Image (cartoon, rainbow over all chains, first blue to last red; front, side):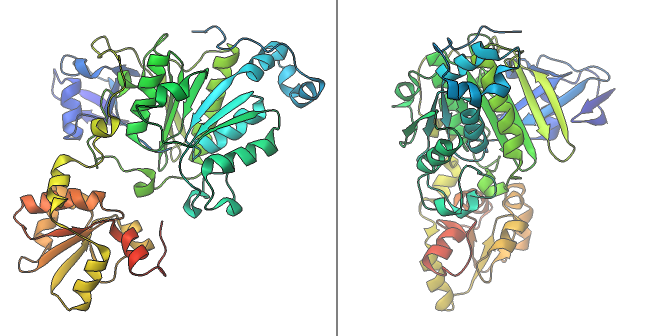
Length: 66
Length: 386
């Protein structure tokens, strides 16, 4: 199943969750926001939200600079 | 989604003000009514730095009647690459005062209120009182969560922007009408994971890209025009030159904000492991110099990034970035029979690396408190700082 993660097409297993996508990118899970098809998924829903073919998943890191 | 204007209009504009704001007045959506609302508006800008600089200048020029500035820092030469409200002759001056002088020149009709204290949980609600909205351009997570929570408790909109290298994020958090910062980022990243601009750098002009959006949104909220950036996050990539917008909703499981907390603790300036590792294993820059002068056999490692090492470094230091300590890659590059001495820019990253190093069995390793900045201050002031 192809999913577009941060702009790059990647092959992910069926039933992959948002939490799985985050884990595939980083060991951290705080200071991160995830948008699926341009909508932020609240952190509490990561584990229960599965991604489907051609979903666009953007994993954002909080930045502090000003 | 359009929202009602945040501010009631002032009674009138003077003849001078009409002349000054004529290019606003002839826009039908702003007009007399919008300009009078701007005149009556009280905006607090937290941080007169990278984002605060363009924000303050444009808010003043736009005719915002009262601008509060909260900043306890002084202007440093390394600020001038992006903090355009300050100039060469302001170096060493409190930023709040320097900013006020620039604003008075841009628009003498704007009243400036200075808050020179450090914003914290004990004073935030008091400082925010009387302001219609807060625009945040601070440089650390602790203050950002503090400002968010205080805005929620004060029920005022929080115009938020943050920047790093070539990337910017900007949104408006307003709990009454949409999500707040915690709905987007419930917790800060672990200490040390996300570098600050002082550690990682920032493209100066990025402050204008993000700061101008922040002012744009403040003006819309004050005058009640357009579609405010409530519930939407804009993400700017200056290298790709793209803006991306994502929707943000209130997190139904988010903890309600009922009081201000200890934000330093919440964000953990340095992780507990690092604090513990550094507790009895920190030497001063002078002690490092003494070790060198007495011919002691040790291995000095700089855990910063390559470009920082090129700006200034301590003689004899080998570069191995902190990340390699966290992954464990660094350990095989280190001699087993010598004491390891770590340093970074100011001591935070080297403490993190020290914790990993001690965990790998290098029990006599130490780090230099204050890092290369302390070395320049205490040992060799002829070197540059950054």
